[in-house]
Length: 204
Figure 1: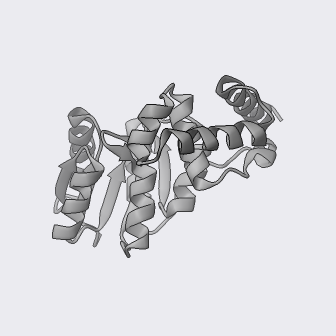
Figure 2: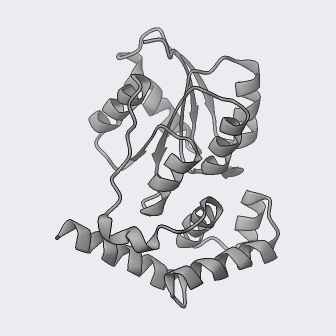
């Protein structure tokens, strides 16, 4: 494997340490960098030749999705895998759209997470297949998907505006657009629609 400089970005030190330990056996020559913030990650990327990034969607000082979108625009060509606590169906597709090579949930067994990491390191893409029945709900923009992810977690407009460096008014505008696209009256209703769509796909 050539990708031996690995940056792990996660809010929780225990998660970062667990991921490193999981990879030590598979990639004994790897050098690991740890951080819990987008700002520190940017510094590490500027100062080091990073080959692979493992990160969560929700970080201490912002969105991992925004971070990936930004570093891809700046020319980062390494592998990127989201290992996320977010279970919202749209997030995997948004991760792909912003330039990630894969997305897997933290709730998956550790051997599957390790396999996903090694697959991405080897040049494969690893994404959960979107249920076909949600096709009518896939017209959200990248920014709307990010805002919806935060709203689904119960974040206030003010908190989202701080994380995304937007005004509260702009966040409110995104929320109105989301509700309109789903023909829904609340974010809870949007989440229920997504859950029903996913459920119907599983049983079809």
